[in-house]
Image (cartoon, rainbow over all chains, first blue to last red):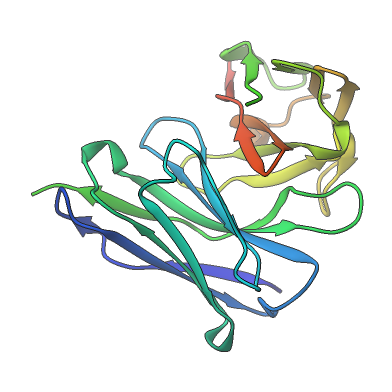
Length: 123
Length: 108
């Protein structure tokens, strides 16, 4: 059974960089069948897609966050990571990592999700 | 960029009733890239429907998806107590993934 687990600091100071890692177990990140993505959800609000990565390193970002976001992959560790710079209180949210189906039809939906981790931006 | 608008914002129903949730896109989209998720309090979203009408593994057949063009519907027949949750539609287009704002199905 595939599992995804987010990890990283739960508290980040304003103007600093938020860094999270998603560890994939029960499957390989280096598969041509899947993308890997980050989604966030401010407490009590809806879902916002942050970005998506392929194991080769190709990335796609939400245009509203693009200038501050970097998503990377470490295939040897079966992990992918999120960095969000210059954070403010508006970046306080639950952050989820997820797997996306890349091939076939239908595709481009999130079929497995991590449990999520709350990151609070506060001094 | 495609915007997904879900309605109603909140649906108040009793167990056993039928729920119809709408997801309208700002322009015609491919049903191949339309999915629905369920989220319960304190939990991650769970995939319900992909390709507008295909049920994900383990999803009961009381959940069904339909629609095409710009209008899509998630129907829940005979609401069970565990179905009261928030539901999101999601679309992929031109290297962008977008979510609707969600519909909360609450117990009347």
